[in-house]
Length: 330
Image (tube, rainbow, N blue to C red; front, side, top):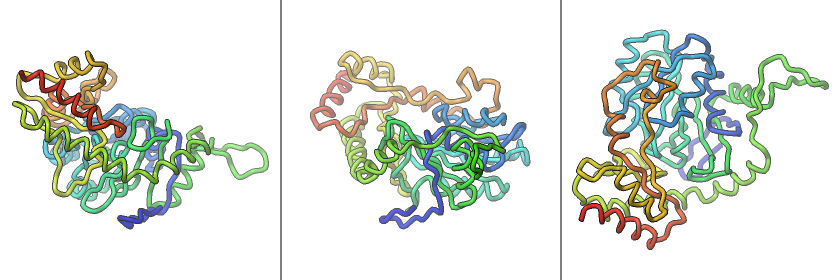
């Protein structure tokens, strides 16, 4: 696999039914099992964390920082100091297309000899210091779900420079069918393969990825220009080393106008917006698991709102959305 613009080679890839399935098989490929601890960002969608449970392992959730909105290296170091050699993998995630600070995270994981699985489901097309997200860890995960920057309606991919591991993942994803004339299975398998129809749709959509990223950036900059001067309004952080895909444009509200005010005002005009992901350590299912960090992820959840970010929106659509929001400050 090669990107003609960035010249990033990956030895192998497995096309799968979902990004969630890709995370699951990546965890299995690095040997995660019962009793193992996997560090996971708390500010993410549950699909990042659920596969840890599939493998009967134990998630420990790590807080974000304001610089990236992603896994905080300081909290990660603290978590390693607490759990030591019980930690068998670190899942990182690039929230809303914003890159995790991979240099710092990788240095910590290399220090402790623990592999990284990179959840790039939301960040296809994002660049960290000249290199595509999803190509730093032992495995990288992409999603082509219906809400992603390109979509096959459902689908995912696992990439790695470890070709033998990817071959094994392909084997598992096709029900672990042995190379025998009859149907023979010596290992547990999964029906995780991507269909030919879905793959064809994805190949066609990949051709317009750069166009989608360009439009997503345009939408973000439109919102920031129109709304960024309102009292108490901030937008998600864009760092010098980060070229995000701007999958979603996210606004932070720290004044009297609250995220629910914005969502309800837009909803009254039949326009959908959404809260930021609710952190995993605040979710009922994951409440029993440990959490390391402060309250950064909670504050982002409390104050954030995801604005409409569809690439089919026109300037007229964007102007209408901004006009509705601005009325809340009058």
